[in-house]
Image 1 (tube, one colour):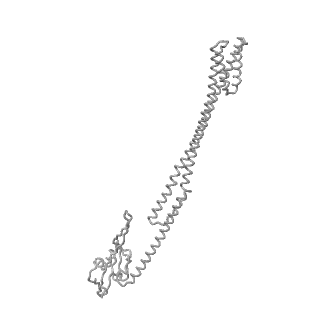
Image 2: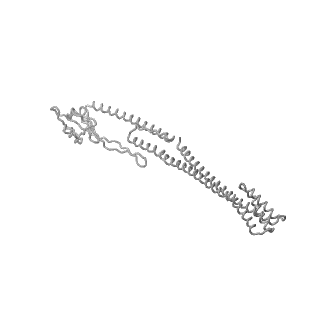
Length: 351
């Protein structure tokens, strides 16, 4: 799976969870607010209506004046249009029946007073029903709030866990392959071409590991091919030098013997010594003639050497080995330079 797709899925899931969390929060808040507002509004209006009707009865004597009766009737009609609780309709009907009795001119004072007592009782019943509803609604609201709190807390915990997984896992998902890739490049820089990478976390990293492995294999093949060519050339040169009748001695920049043919070993009396890889300075003690050769600045006069009671003359030629040193400057232009990395001493016998 591609990194882009994984990022899209991870952050998309987080976005959906946060969006769902917000939507649910708004839903519950609105539900609690609207339910409580509508219910409590109706209950409080009923209490206000009953208080108005009770005030009319308290502030006026029988028989009621037309103004007082009209005020009572308006409040009663409002109450009849605001019935919300079970039993409230019957109590309101009782108030209406009592009100009709006290405004009926055929009823005597005693009957009207009895009707007022019944109205007060019904008003008290209505108040009780609405007060009970207010308390019940408050308890229901508290219950809903508690449930909402638990639900939203659970959603917040889930959101936190998703965020934690993303924060904890995503850096490692990117950084770990990059660290392995850096380690692989370090191994390649040390010519360890056998290192291989295997990334399976994403398609991009898989492609990167395949390209790296192809590069490492190509470098290994190139290294083997180059080394084979160098060794082949070295074998040919050594074989050629061994067959040359002239004295040939080769040393590197550290004054270590690279090659010395049979003629040179015989002349220097070093046949019994393994000279390859040894310091040529250390061989002077076994062959004083070697010091003369090394110190000889290639004069025009032949070098005379006594051997088997005879004197032989040799023309010496010193060849300085200059190795090319290619460097890349900051402008990426290649500069050619060289440095001395040893010498070859050739002695040709002359008559």
